[in-house]
Length: 349
Image 1 (tube, rainbow, N blue to C red):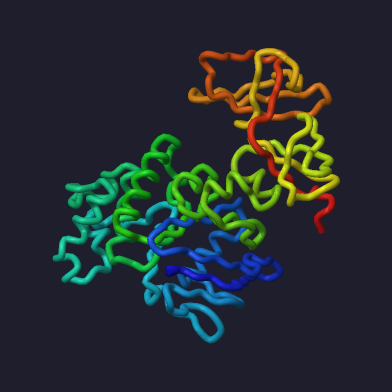
Image 2 (image 1 turned 180 degrees about the vertical axis):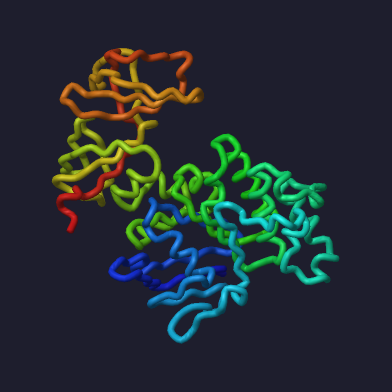
């Protein structure tokens, strides 16, 4: 059963369409990430689900209850939806326990629910602390605990990790995901961070210009993007011009096999950087290239390479210790695994 259903949602601000016929189904008990660039409509969608903004058309169901639609607009407090904003927004005059218990009935507070959710987010024993005594990561954990405390039907997280530094962000989002799953909560995470969406969510809805282009498990979105824009937005992508005939694509990286059901003629093929094998020197069966740049991340490196014809590609190198490469080195490239093909953007109306 779906915890959230959005059908044909439209919302405009003057001449600007923020939502253009959005359809989304969020399964119960999982995390769905709404992923897209700034201004794509993802926060407007979240605010419509929360009840802060009225739809112009379409409907929203929380569970089986219609909370928005023609002739219906349930107030936010009647939707059983909790929101975790970007900055946590804790009450500075209340303790951690006071913040988490805010809005709970006396019976709920006596039941030990506050201590239960604090333990879930890794803050057991910190109920007496004040918000100013907490780190940024701890404050966000308190905000999540407060959202979980009343057992809402749905938790909405609006870019909740944005204000944290990179290392802490990974730790906090991992712990928040564990807390949501341990509590059996259903959550929608709004984010522009591809890595965050892929690592946290059970389902990713990719949004652009007020529309959802693809909604699928993270691995499917990454491995089988719905179109070339999704491919380029979700992860690193090498999109190459190609001529396709009879299941073979002629590309700057050689002749590659593509799915027979794909486009023919002028097209684009998608090669992920990790699909490019880098050999120490050009050899038979490889495409010659020159390394022109390198981004070193410790656990891997992303190489920028120029093919002899002038095309620039990227390759991800995982064994950077055993196989160091210097800028200017001549290497050979070989594509591993299947590639996908998409219609050329020039041919898409």
